[in-house]
Amino acid sequence: MHKSIFAAMAALAILAADQAVAEPVNHMRERVRQWQIRALENAIGKERAAELLAAKPSPEIVGGSTAAAGRWPWQVGLVQASILDNFNAQFCGGTLVDDLFVVTAAHCITENNGSVTPKAQIRVLTGTQSLLTGGTRRVVDQIVRHPNYNDATTDFDVAVIKLRTAAPGKKARLLTAAQEAELAATGDRAYVTGWGSLTGGNSFPNQLQEVNVPIVSRTNCNDSNSYDGLITPRMICAGVSAGGKDSCQGDSGGPLVVRDAENRYEILAGVVSWGFGCAEPNLFGVYSRVAVLRNWIAQTMAALSPEVAAKEESTSCADLRGSSQSACLDGLSLAPK
Image (cartoon, rainbow, N blue to C red; front, top):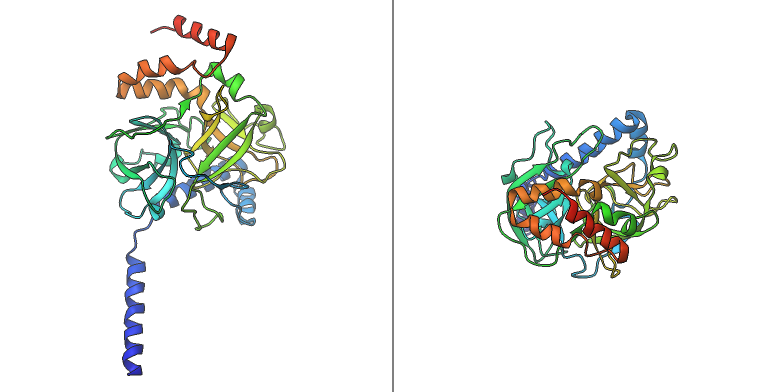
């Protein structure tokens, strides 16, 4: 009898091992991780990068907490199509800015050889803040990467994904150049959200995480005790000088949102891009700067879906007040069509 029990236990152990071997590998998540290592090495050299990578792992949404249900309806997850389990398939984030369009980071959809990831390999998870339940996986119709994206410097780190079917629900609105000085100035508060690893390794949250951070001036972010000239005009920084709050790997491509005139965090000011370590002192999170990249995003969406153009123009000044709104509207009326 005991031999039968031991034989059954052994058989179950072999079966479990076989299943573990057969489980699909999230090569996209690993690719993004390897990209971040290369980006770090390109920026500060292999020796310094190795020191940072060898440090005690930090959480990816550092100093944050689990987001309240339904708080961030425009948050999406990019998932590997070949893995059916959303929790194991998610590798990057993104932001719904229209029924058919998602804004994400270019490095999320760039292969190791520099090509754009084939659309059939990616699904976009919408309508949920949980990787365990709910949501809809949507087929990708098209992926457009910014033509000036530089994998070595992470400049122009933005891409647009068009969905095959419309995603319902509230969308984030793209920050304009006219809005930036009022809504995303130095010291203004912003929220970052994502499903990044909670240990810097392979421990990922199944519920969306959030953290509130201040916008940091380009001068501060670019000085010698921070990124020492690596921040381009297409980047915006956020975080605290003492460290302790940040976003990192796993959150890539997700939103940095700022408050509108009604105090609602609904304006997309940045796309999670890169940084040195996680929540290190003076090493802020670096985000693709939507105010500067917005025209390309809007033009790309309009080219793929012409009805988007009129919608974007009619709402771009709505979040400003008084003279700022008047100036924005005047700018639209004078802009070439």
